[in-house]
Picture 1 (cartoon, each protein chain N blue to C red):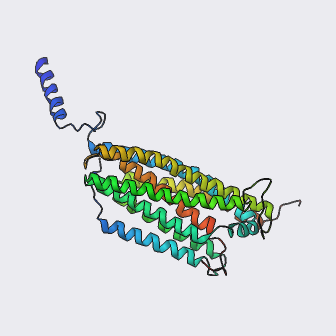
Picture 2: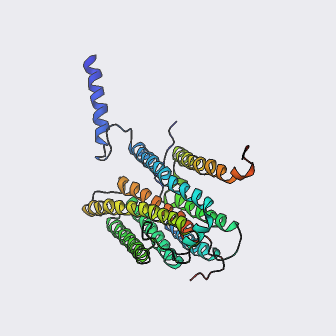
Picture 3: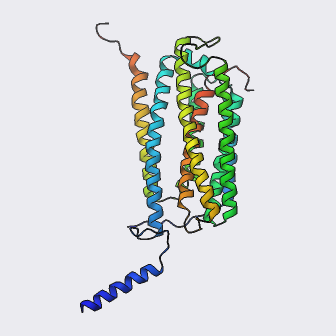
Amino acid sequence: MSSHAASSHTSAVVGHESAHDPNLKHHFENADQQKESASIGMWVFLLTELMFFGGLFLAYFVYRQWYPAAFISASNKTDVLIGAINTTVLICSSLTMALAVHYASLGKKQLLVFFLIATLLLGGIFLGVKGYEYHDKWVHHEIPGEHFECEGCQDAGHAQLFFSLYFGMTGLHASHMIIGFGILLVLIFQANRGDFTAKWYTPVEMFGLYWHFVDIVWIFLFPLLYLIDRVGRPLL
Amino acid sequence: MQEHSEHHIVPKRVYALVFTTLIIMTWVTAWISTVDLGPMNIWVALSIAVFKASIVVLFFMHVKYGTRLTKMIVCSGILWLMFLLFVTMGDMWTRGWMGVPGR
């Protein structure tokens, strides 16, 4: 009787094993549950990131409320055209990332690798432009500190607060992108090796969530750092 | 009750539409910042940003096709961010409303 129970148990396990996907970890019921768990874990991580950036956004709103004149004149030092172009570049990289996930889900390896590389390149262009902007700020002494100068700024002392937040927020955003590059390089290597299939491409999908989140942060940074009080000034 | 998350493949034209909208809205928000709307400028800029972020979350991040649990987690995160921003800013905005006794 006990041997019968044991054998039926074994056969049940074997039956389970025979349908076993090597990427399905044993502590999950099925691939759907595993995928859902990964997705929820990633979202919880992104929410901590949301609160992390949220603190900086709050600091921005509070100081903008306290020193509106300083913020208006200091934010007019940022170049809207460059900001808008960079936003466009980052949205393009979000599209290529979405397409990478799309082709991963169809199991098309070459298109997956192509779009991952495209995402990496577009992200590189974004950071290059950001570097150019930082250099421009450096040349114009717009780095907060002892040698800070802000030509034509009202309340130059508090204008430094704007630039501190500018560098803090764009810097934190850029560091997220640099971390993203590292992960992207690994994903490109793995995708090229053929690690991902239409059934299992969770790392690509989770990285997609991260990359889109970084895009969303920029979607809010662009109006707050570049677009406040442009009234009466030419766009280009 | 386990909600079945079907293997949803979003058609490419959805991505194309979302992408086009994002690009157009980027240049619309840049342009509208030069139009004098008084104190509404910041709110218009933020509304456009919220709209752009929403379509990224719904379509690029697949939340529209996700399970109810995923949707709830995303909404709870946004709720807490709103607490952080609006409770603090509520204080900032209303400090001048009442005089301070003894001052």
